Length: 346
View 1 (cartoon, rainbow, N blue to C red):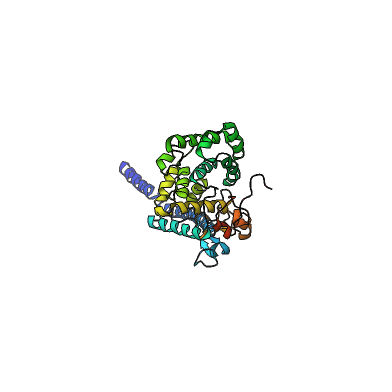
View 2 (cartoon, one colour; view 1 turned 30 degrees about the vertical axis):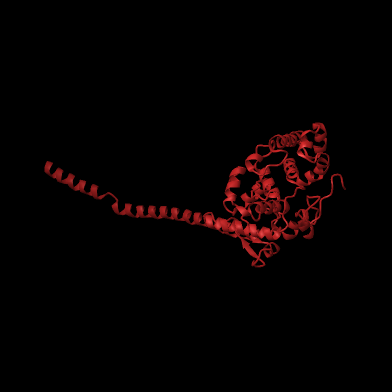
């Protein structure tokens, strides 16, 4: 019985091992695999569809078309031209220099009569007028200085003036107390240190009260014919829009822009850029649709692109209005420019 019982136990045990549902488990696993793979496949298709749609939208918004009139002003340009919103991120140094110089050449054709927009007859008057132009317009300075220079024509006269009388004359220019102190101070320095004459060296000019590098280069370039770059607010804004530099410090901007051009171009370059900033490429709303260098500008589209609407944004002679000088050069008048009215007129 014991032996028979063992055999019976073995026979019964054997089926227990075989009873493991191996064949049934295989289909179950396959079914599970199918379900899992089915679940994974569906999200993959949905994700691809979601990614594809935004890509199409971005591509559709990239091209920016320059207006016909803006493009036509540039030589050799077709009536309609696609403008790349930004130059290539990997723009080489050579490409940057070529682009910058071409913009300057185009602006020279648009503003062949560009000149300093402050009225002056000698270096002393230009120096004083430039100091007064801080935080105000050249037009306001030009309307104010005739009275000032009529009463105090020389550094000696202004140095010995009554401060209160000078303040009253300079009141329309704003910050009249500080400006009175500066122009009287620089006049005294000219009398005491330079024999009443304006020095023609940068290192001497910047030591005068109220005179920085910007003012010094205006005087050197326009009164002495010595090249210099005038980095005013218009110049800073435009060279950054054109991606000539990323600097914000005026001295660093001056150095980087100066390296892109021959020294002989510096003074005229300053006039071209500043004139364009005052007339077309304004700070808040550039007249992109009326801009003659639109195909060359990486910032095209920041302002009004419709040609007719952009025309209404033009200032001074480009918009048919008087300029900033009461006594502008003859070349400016011959080009259709109008002299500014005197203070109090109209």
